[in-house]
Length: 381
Ligand code: FES
Image (tube, rainbow, N blue to C red; front, top):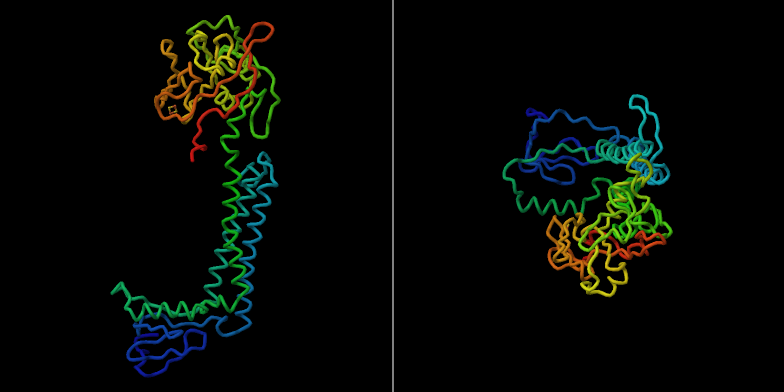
């Protein structure tokens, strides 16, 4: 509507909404589609061109199907994403011209997620451009707060005329949009849930001391393993451990040969981080716990080296006090009392490894750890 075309109050002008509603001038205000007042009689907009969907019912129905198809594509892509997430091996690769060899899983999930998002995006845009009310609206800048009458009118319009978006009149769009939006979060949930891995308590309950590799899905059968000096990877005899001495030890088979650097665990760092143990010898008379005596060998005791606070290596042993100290936050464990916490933020003792000797006098494990090693934050209530 141009300035020169400004109608005078009390006249009725041609419909511009395409929905058959006359736009009536009422006391200097244009009353637009659905009776919504518009104080800008002359907003200076170019001549309005009605859309095909406003003039022709079959064009509107066609647009509805197109919108529904786009939302349907989003639904299918989302479902396909979930299927492919589980179906494609993470190690599979694919060659994509212009990109090169890449992960098949990433490529498939990326494409399906793109269609899932684009389906919703294009559907919403097409819906807005073809079927939603084609009303030109100019918003007043001042005052920012609408008048009470306007606010009441908006509430009324939303409550009574919410159907102007045609959502109630076009159930196909309503249901497909609901499906597309409802499923939109599924890829995120699936991806996050699938990527979190096992609960820490579960993975930290299994170490190489159980009998071998302890990665996801591996539950090795227990067998006694020699305690090997780290990093020399040499077995230790009970007679080597004198009172006051301390050894960093790893289970047999975990470390590679120090000379050839061959063998050892596939996930070396991860296995080492869980299986590290401190070995000390105390005067048996100083040990205050029967369990500690039973699980040790002639005063030699072995404890997990991973702090039960947040997992730093417990590295300092005070021979005089028999205290183990974690350098990160100063948690202190008393070796004469089952390594119970006597200071600091750790909440539980260091797990003890039960040991004995084999026929040749070498120290071996008598059973795996009976509790999870490392931090125990997941146990807090
Ligand atoms: S990690 Fe040992 S005290 Fe915090």
